Length: 196
Ligand code: ATP
Image (tube, rainbow, N blue to C red; front, side):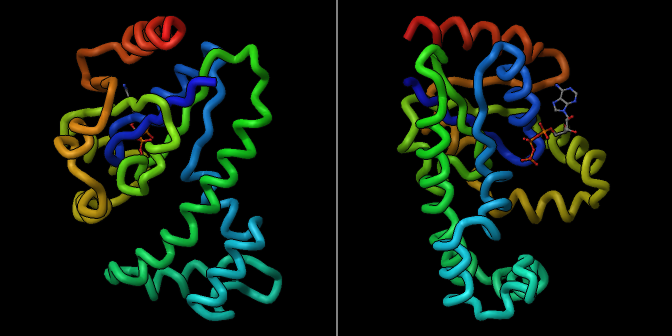
């Protein structure tokens, strides 16, 4: 079955675009949401996190100690790379398992990931979509959605490839601007994927 990766910068609207695909009956694997769940649900990942960042990474009841982990990886690229090296393979495993549960009548699936290109997970996809939006609009949307400052949004953006870098790697595009209908663009892509 065809696997399509979908990504975009923070606030570009990739989740919103995925919701439109879902209305067409296309199953979506939300990699970032799954990654958060796996931090406590995947025993291999849990063991790896404890080995790398210490037993204090989890509370006695098995909850993730976000403060402990964030204190180590925040502004420390080397430690962040270590965390990603544990999390990404766990998400790959979960994606494989999830893909195996999809009925063969489904024409294609989507994998939504903020770091699709950065993590290398695009290599598990047959095609990729990049959702783009003007910088000011992305910042405004995230500030509104997450109730955060412009500086906080920009700090998150700095950790991702730029749209220019991602555009070189993507096969298809959705422009989520004020004057472009994402519904029409999704319908067009859907038809293209059905004919692949
Ligand atoms: P993140 O990487 O932070 O998860 P994202 O790329 O998944 O972001 P969304 O959560 O889909 O982005 O969109 C960001 C915000 O902008 C949301 O509040 C969403 O409702 C809003 N938004 C996205 N696209 C549109 C649109 N075309 N019209 C109006 N609001 C939109």
